Picture 1 (cartoon, rainbow, N blue to C red):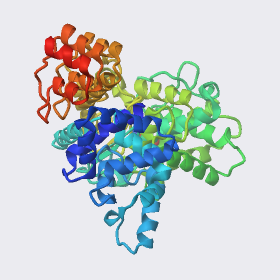
Picture 2 (cartoon, helix red, strand yellow):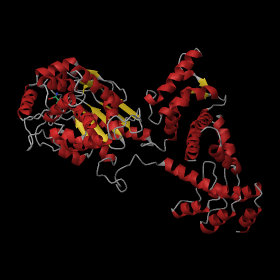
Picture 3 (cartoon, helix red, strand yellow):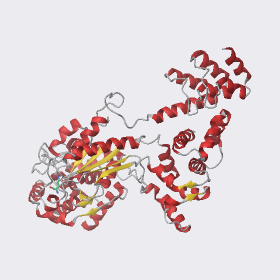
Picture 4 (spheres, rainbow, N blue to C red):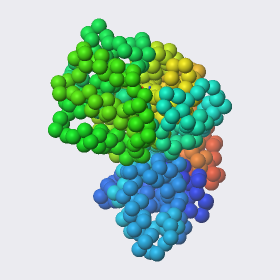
Length: 568
Ligand code: GLN
């Protein structure tokens, strides 16, 4: 039933956007002109004995068909994308493939030019019905008003773009020569809604932003107990590349170089130890791919070679670790170091990192494929350490001001996780004195100054901040359809509840019809009495066809209601 009601809401929304000659207009108009028919249309959704999947297809077809009785694919895809879902989303792959083969079959040059009859429509969307319904219902998605949210993001983006302070890392030529003007922000919600602005397709090397990812893989494969025999959970309070161990002679945490190098040795030696290092590299890349839903992943060999060249400090750390027996048995120092440099040199773009961050925000399930890639307990551990140790020596201040688990890298990227909501990647090469992207940090500060995303923002009472997870217009609309539904069914208990919750009982629907109109049309005398005597509703309100509730009661022959309304 919820689906039916939501689709009615979606229908209304669509109706407003479609030209009045659309079939859906006629359908709706009739439905509401005659309250009896309105309840029929509810019944149609709920009691049909058609298979539920094909019923959904039929409803979707009705929603989108034009006055020729076919669905224009361009309109359909545009509406789908307006909620933040991309055509390239792997969950739509089958549908898009179906559209391509149909357009080839019909000799059409582009899928956007297709118009589908009901049979073709069903064939095309049948494998993607669930995700399409979710996208169009949009009341169930985490950021319901996605375009509005993106407007804010765009605004933050341009504010930060004006900030040209800081400078790129200089320790290797590949980072020193990058254009410092690059600036991109991508986000991906836990439902797979996506938005990108700026240089989000330009590749960069992941560097330390990959440390939590490598840690996540190790945790997911080996479990926390094994991993933390080798590496601690404390912020070091020292530089990320400092030659220092904790009181147990272990690296402080997996986010500093010492810890990350040890994680590399665990990946090589404790998980499928029979794999050659080359195979292990592919194996890890495959994890990255699955976490990102197959977004761009490459390898920058020049960076890898430079990293190896400029690695005195990292080698010093590695020998120090070796001296203190921090590596598992059989670890080969050179292999471990090469692996560490290779993983720093993986090439990604903002879209890759934002979708990996979304997988972390979503308990380890990639929102674009629905595959559980990382165990949820591992994700919790990763986020905890990103929160306390992810931003070098600025981690404490960042946790205080921004309050979001984030990891930065020397190439200027920031992987930001808003647990249960979304993942974000900011990338801009200019770094501050701590080695964090200047614009990236500013973006996070802007974000939490408007939205209540700080870990310790109160979700119920933060009067100066906005909660984009909340439904605004949608909430009102669905409240309205619920009360109208209750009136249709004569559900006095529900009506009472709405009245008690402070709802304005004179509120009109799109056709100017009130709860009283519906109750009178359906002949529910008890509801009519309650509305008039207790709620003191206005009986004189006319709908768009110029009818009062009394007119409706007369029209549908409910004499008891007519008597009551004319004498009270
Ligand atoms: N390749 C760099 C290093 O090991 C990574 C450091 C970073 O991104 N902060 O020193």
